[in-house]
Length: 275
Image 1 (spheres, rainbow, N blue to C red):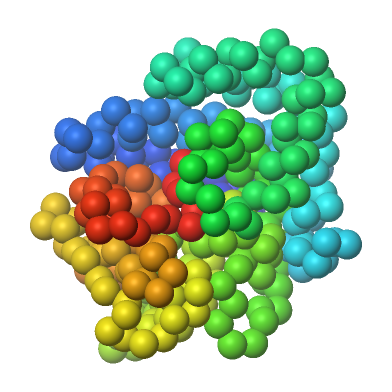
Image 2 (image 1 turned 180 degrees about the horizontal axis):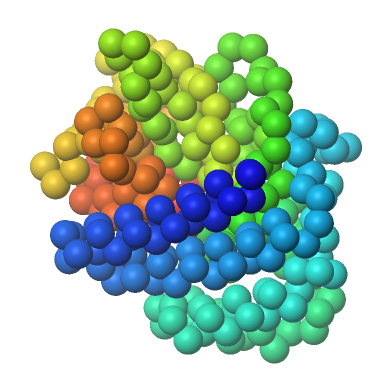
């Protein structure tokens, strides 16, 4: 059942990318490329879900994060070659060139690329590394999502700023309807699980003084906002599903280019970039 649900989630992401690309011309190119990536990711996920027993997220590995010890590179390498061919054919010039260069590597070097990213994915605060990490991240993400699609794990007390499933930083915040208000959750940048988080609190440094946590909303996206922090100078985008229940946080975040420009112009960075 979990496999069918996540495959359906990919269909929703693809449809949302098509819709947003049709109404926001400035985001059409990046969303078109994302659609190709999501279609590949869905196919990889379906292969894994149909290939054997799924590992539940409740089993914790030696690293202390449930997913970090479960990378099976031997079975993934053939698909990585296919993924690199896709990016070389459909990606923007710089990424396409990077994919072509990587695709001629020996299996051992490709294994190292995947293993190195798997061990550290989503744990750094270096937004400049996003380009170098794109290929292993986009390829491994459905595998991480597959591994995390089991039973819930016990979350740490307080307000954990790292994913309790894989230890990665969040990529976006989500407000979901709860009672008369909204409940804040964080969406993992790697395995894409959600976990609860306090409303007025920086997800990067823990700042909780409201006047140090400015918010920005762009006219084109009234249901999206930038939650910035004047202490650490990082920001997290938040998707308010109480204002637009059709939004798909992972995809709408990609389309929100005006919010990224505002944040960069004001000196804020993302702790974890979206694909």
